[in-house]
Image 1 (cartoon, rainbow, N blue to C red):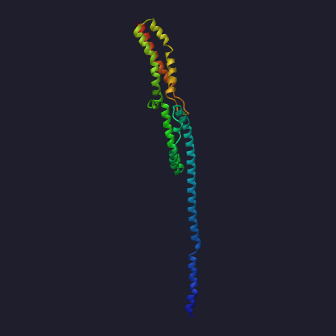
Image 2 (image 1 turned 90 degrees about the vertical axis):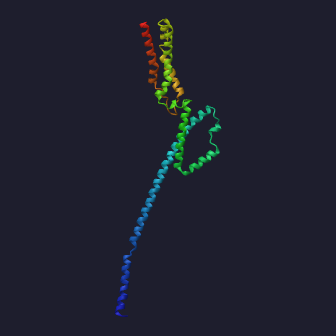
Image 3 (image 1 turned 30 degrees about the horizontal axis):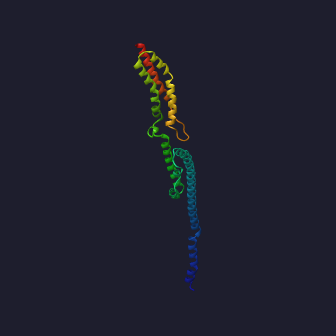
Length: 236
């Protein structure tokens, strides 16, 4: 072996060790580990968020279901009172199949369907409550109740005007005025009852009878009419 070959042979392990030192597998393995750990943490966080959202959706669906059931129970009783056959109030097998198919999308789909059912039940409440007065029932309570109080408050004043026009300033008119004194209270009482019958409240609510407004609607016409007749009698 020549001295040059010995130098070449001796130098080869040195270069191989240097190359091996530059390709140390520890940093690469550590980088791969960190990347995998970050990815796993992202997946874990995503799964936790999805599970939390699903739990909230399930809870909301349960609450919506309870609300719909609470609203449907009095409606079913009311429909039976109106003569609807009980079999018509029960879903048919095809309807149940279609409902089950629509629920296969998960809690979010079920919640959306229950909210739709709640809106339909709310509309049914309005339909059952109006009793033939669908438009008036949706008016504000003041103008709506005025349609009840005002005609009742005008009955006796119109009768007094008629009596005065027929008999003039005589004893009959005076008697009519005396008899008509409690008329506003009677008109208000009848109107109070009529508002409750014509515009019943929804489940869990109270009838808004607008008592002060109704009292004024019954009292003002009587006072104005009585005062006008008395002044006319004094001037005659």
